[in-house]
Image (cartoon, rainbow, N blue to C red; front, side, top):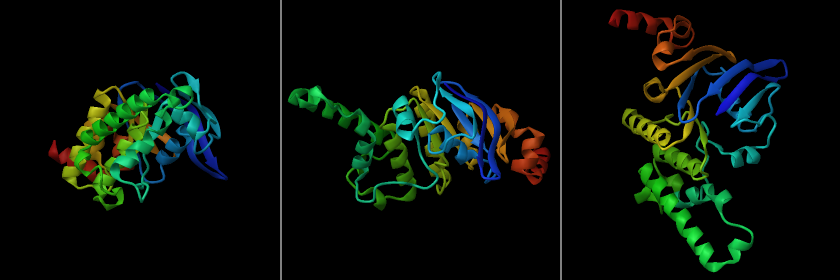
Length: 257
């Protein structure tokens, strides 16, 4: 589905991503981990068109999207969430999701036919309600999103991204700020998204979430791929343990075994 070939991104004399190659298969959850500054969010910014690559290519469903504008990439079926919650302060939960549906709103001659417009509006409203139910937000749909607990605000952001009907969604630390129970619930929701046919790329520092849901994991370190494989393979990779999980963690795992 997504193919990244020899991708590099530099800012002046600083290289954030160096000669990175990744392939994300359709209908999977692909986890990305690495220390702060490893290039994970920069990679998301390049994939979604917020930054052009310095070299290399990004292909989505066979189309080279390197250098495409964000709205062009969105139309192809890629959505994302951000590290920091970005919601419209004066909108309700439902209105946030309806904004996410905007590119599916009918335009042209059909929009002038009253019955067609009503049917279209009803279908979009049903889709919005289904998304709110999926994320446990239906009963809060008429509340201002900014008034919700932080964990729910993050769910609203994911629901809004899903409202665009993406084929691929990039989630940047969706469990940040959540307690253990909230993170566990979110993990189940992400798996449901994959099971519904969606492909997910997940950046997450909460290893209990990422390792639980991911089909495949890649580890970035100083902009380079350090390791890639199943969650079990990555967790047991000596280079990963030393560079990211830490030697202390390795000793604890050895003692536990």
